[in-house]
Length: 176
Image 1: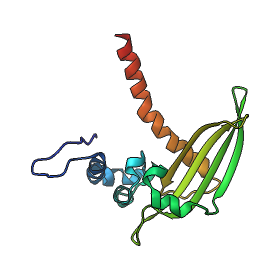
Image 2: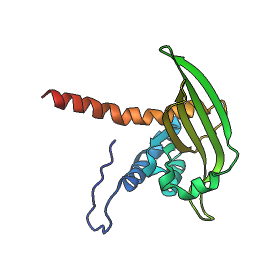
Image 3: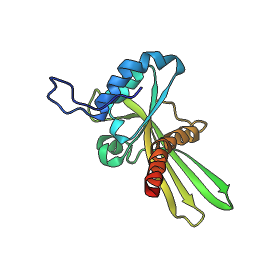
Image 4: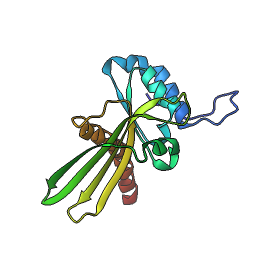
């Protein structure tokens, strides 16, 4: 069910991933709606037109949300009292702290017509206090202390979905 990025006859604007995603949702969203899909995407998809299209198609989303491309959102959350949850985990004899922060009903962009999303942030810190990983997302899913870890795990899975095939391809080509 791929949707290719390609200019169509008669179009003046360059095609892009966002437009391909909207076409894909138009073509397949209704059929997948009974499955209640959660669409994962990078920062490029964390925009109101794509997020609205996902919701209109009956799905939910978890999109990476970088501060550099979401100035209005990060201005809104700056100084806000965020919900928080920390967990200490041991894995392979090493202790790590998982830090979760989230804020509900945050405007995705500037303007009175901005849709609201739920923002969440995640960080892994080792026993010495060194930050190992930091990432943030926006989602349409409700974020609570009971759901935040699962939503973060889903958001992090997108990286694995994209990167594992690329890593395998690099290894395969390196052996030739």
